Image (cartoon, rainbow, N blue to C red; front, side, top):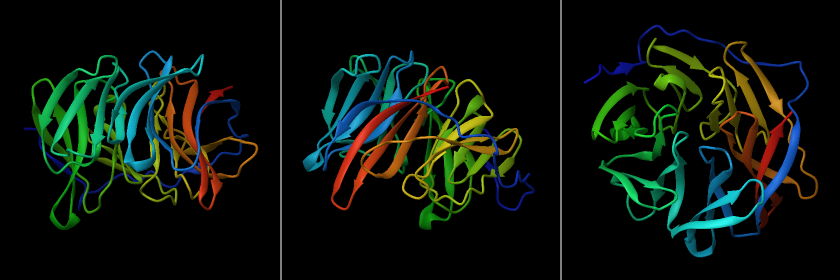
Length: 294
């Protein structure tokens, strides 16, 4: 078993705070693909491996949740599965899905999104949040396990083919979701990037809560986008090499924006899909948008 890295009590390299770039915001052409009214939610958007479709979960009244796909060119919708899902991840290399299901949390289950054949099953308890695919391989997933009393956060690496499971990082107290990054070496947990190859810890120091959404640019390992949802109501591009952060301009006319959520890069890195929650009080509309970067 690989030696577990711990980031408590060791010297780490601090990258420092990110500077807001003086360059103009990143702009692009906006296209709305899907819209639902009050009591219906959109979550977990993910691009298909070739970039022609976006998969997402539609959460309707009475806790009914469905996995859908939307064709980016035509906006046509296809129902894939009607069950009680609340989150999911989709592999970048194959159209495989790892959903979080209301009725079972004792296993990692991976399905083919075209046929819904169950491809892998690994029985494992104490999964916090839901498993995330490696950006390099569809048969590697990662998940967090929180220690007794929430005194530790253990990052697990699971090989779905060999059914092996190893702890590769102890990130200390807390309960964070994980965002795997390039090379199976960079991981975002909470508001910190960990490099398990060099034992670096890179605090992002963005002043965001730990429930923010991140996604790595598939064509540039130095870049990731971040969205803190309700607080900042914007999407930000972070560059780890230059230590700059640059806003992504999202201007939506009409109803006020309550939050922006779940930004994800397309496979070619030229488009960003995201969810916009519009309205206030008890009236909201959930919309799935694409920003075609200029």
